[in-house]
Length: 284
Ligand code: C2E
Ligand code: MG
Ligand code: MG
Ligand code: MG
Image (cartoon, rainbow, N blue to C red; front, side):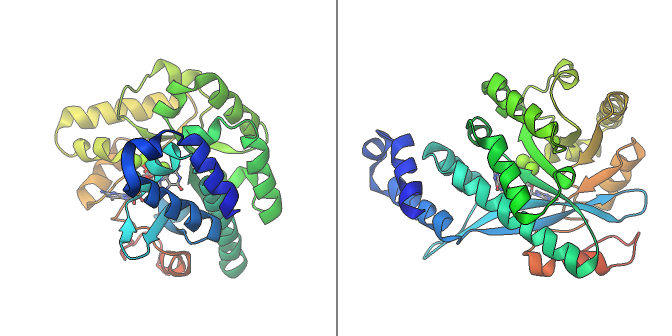
């Protein structure tokens, strides 16, 4: 596996090793080795329903503690993985680990939470991507209907045809699709109607502005109404304050995620969020 990953990294990054010198390629090689050795961790962050405060889902977030350097932000190592062709093995590792963690959580607590996993455009465009996802689900026994693939709009812009076909194939097997970071970049309202999407995740930057002016709150209200009319659920990302929580809830949003409800934690700590009484704000 290590050799395969490194080979893929070299193939995809051909020409870059020379151009960017030793440091970038050293990090990429360490990342490839970490993926192959299962040294990445997957943290889980709760998604809550506003009506009763219950945790209804989780988002799986990759974490890499680079030996001798400490934690590397996901934004950095995901970009590196994309540039060096490591996204396939990395994404599959995160999906398998998270499915196992959620299956364990179900076995221990009786709670079956929806699992959100981020997918990069590069993975989505690999020809065998749908088959590999279904194989991991079969292997771990995790249901397709409790699996949410989170893709960004930009992912679907660049490689539309292949990416959209992969999502359609997986959706026909029951997998759920979320449009991540909605409201950043060029969000196209007309595309909401044509993309194979079930959930809108409104970006944290959008959530934050709802508290800054009545017009922004009104914009969010309109967005939620539009999503409702198309049969899409809306999750407000990055809810940090009680004020934001009240505002996004009052404009009709029914689900939220953010530090107010719980930070991403290692799976062994996640049950803490489930033990709290309903309706109480969840804090770490
Ligand atoms: P994302 O998918 O939009 O994930 C949400 C990000 O917001 C996470 O950052 C999370 O820790 C952070 N977050 C959650 N609540 C709050 C809050 O209340 N306030 C603030 N300021 N931030 C909050 P993280 O873990 O650093 O991940 C960043 C991005 O990296 C993710 O954004 C996702 O695009 C990407 N990523 C992470 N893990 C994976 C992965 O396994 N595969 C892929 N393809 N991308 C991943
Ligand atoms: Mg996400
Ligand atoms: Mg997001
Ligand atoms: Mg984001």
